[in-house]
Structure formats: structure tokens, C-alpha cells
Amino acid sequence: MAIPDKNIVQTILEPFEPEIDRCIRKAFQDWREIKKVHNLLYNRTRATVVHDRTIYWALDIFPAKQDIKIIQKYETAWFLANNANHEAIFRFKKGHGLGFSRNLPTINALAFHDPDHNTLWPEAHRVEIVYLLNILKTKIDRILVVARNGKQLVWTYPIIPQAVVDIPSIPTSQSSTDNVLRPIGDTEETVKAVEKDRE
Image 1 (tube, rainbow, N blue to C red):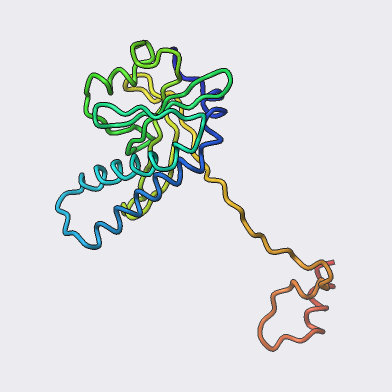
Image 2 (image 1 turned 180 degrees about the vertical axis):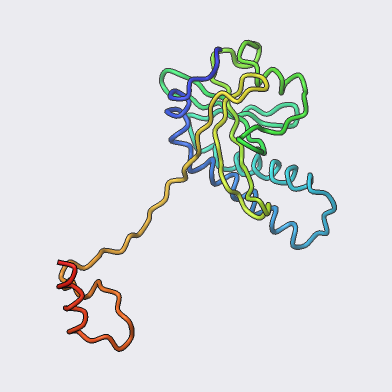
């Protein structure tokens, strides 16, 4: 498979974005709960725990999806998503900087990042889902889909969780003076004078 096509990958993964987002955020919440009751010594513990819990939640959430196949081997998991015409395979990783994942240079990791390496799912677009933390490492700042060509970042785009936002309606029957900010003690006559000056 050549370098992953961003538009194709986005089309394949878009239906799964809420689940992808939920897996990672639930995993990070698990980490916060674990940290409350255990004295953990090393920063790297966080990445290990979050990765483990992300896979845990993904194995729980994704089996209900018909268009996702879970592949578990080498103490990790890959997720093969497809639509009628194409396949994309992704894995979860911690990211840093612009979206580079942190990897030990194992044979599998190097092969995953090499578009010319055809032994791993040769027809699938290979991408990573990476999460980036805020500067204080207290919450997830962004979740990105990332395509790489070896050590180069080819493209990224953010996962946007679907949410219903309740936007309050603005009454239309208000007079124009109701929208004017005024100091305490200001009179209606003063407001009207200010409005007249604006005209």
C-alpha cells in the first residue's frame, strides 16, 4: 500500500470517531482514578496504563461494530475498519509534538510506518490514533489520526467527538435598548441619548 490517502481514511473512520474518542478518554479517566489510590513513581507508567486501558475499552466497545475487525498479537491490538471499497488499519498510541507517536523501534513498528512494507495488511491504509496531553499532563488536549512515512509525518487530522450542544435561543421581541450595557444608576433617557448619538 502506498502512503495512506487522507480523504479515504477520513471517510472510513468518521463513523467510528465517537467510539475512538470514548476509548481514549475513558482510559485516561481510569489512569486518574488509579493515580488517586497508588503512589506511582515514573512518568512512563501513565503511558503504559493509558495504552492498556485504551485497548481494554476498545475491546469492549468495538465488537458491537460490524465494520471493525480486532487483531490481537504481540501484546497489542490493531483495528481493521472498512467500508465497501477500502480498508484502514489503526492502532492507538501516545503522541507528542505535532502528532508523532512514541515507539520502540521494533520490527513491527518500523514495518507499520513504512508504506512500502507489504507484509502487514498490504491493501489497508495504515494510520495511528494518537492522543496529546495538555502542558500540565492533566487532560487530553487533542486526538489525531496520523499517517507516517518512516520518520516523516505525512498528514494529520483531529478526531472530533460528536456532541449535541444545547444553544439557548435568543428572544427576538427585545427592544434595542435591552442589549445596551449601562452603568448602575443609568436612566432610560441616557440610554436613548447614547443610541441617538450612534445614529
